[in-house]
Length: 325
Ligand code: PBG
Image (cartoon, rainbow, N blue to C red):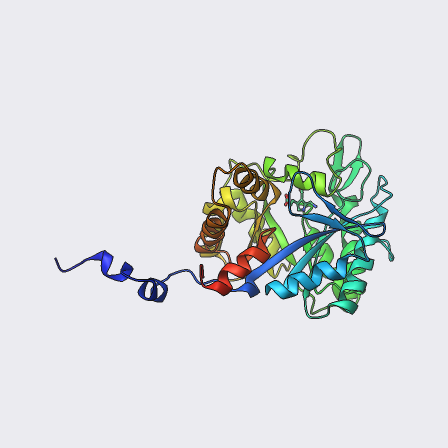
């Protein structure tokens, strides 16, 4: 036999040598929820192991991120007061803005990303301004732009709009430029599907009260070409990084986009993906570390350059140990 595929699998050294997918801690982003109050480290019921923090407990949590080797975090803010126009999203002293200020001061070594959206801040829980019974795209744009600028002013290194309004990348780019932040990148949630996998997040962010669904703005999961359209639009509007979300059931979309564009592609392994693995592991049905290693690797293998995940710290540890990557 001339060809024996098993030759390159015979021991750990050669297997590692010929690995096709290489991962690094610097490609991971860890999402963190910050809420108003004091002394809060409150576990999110639907996401065991993940917490909401208040501003005073946040720095310790960030130190843990640094210790794990993860270099970047993404903040979600949960305000006490929500209103119809989500005014706490762009309040100068809003919860997420204060989180950026404290984080930058206390733990300056991390790279800080801000999720830009209205749904954590609106009383109705939708990602934009409501007009009649629909979300008003064009009225929402200036508020998203204001939100992005307020986050960057407070210390965000990058903004990531997740609202799925048309034209928001351009609105944000223009506003950032006008405010002098020409070098602040935009990571756009470009192909964001209307997904049941966001369920646990909505408990985490307190945005599970909304009526109806998000299908008039998030994408229909039957569609693949439409993801390319969204990516083209966002790149045309100035997006620097393109995101696919969720990750696990959308590996085909990640690959398709990776093959078509020359900007970095991010994938968000969302709350429901985390919750499913956690629940199965807690029930003793699967080996958690094994599943996390394999799913994370599959997302990079599909073509993602960046992975946003609640398992970021654990994945970083596995990369360090050489188990994956
Ligand atoms: C919206 C937003 C959502 C997530 C990130 N940003 C939820 C939604 O669109 O309903 C989901 C993240 C997750 O499920 O982990 N601001």
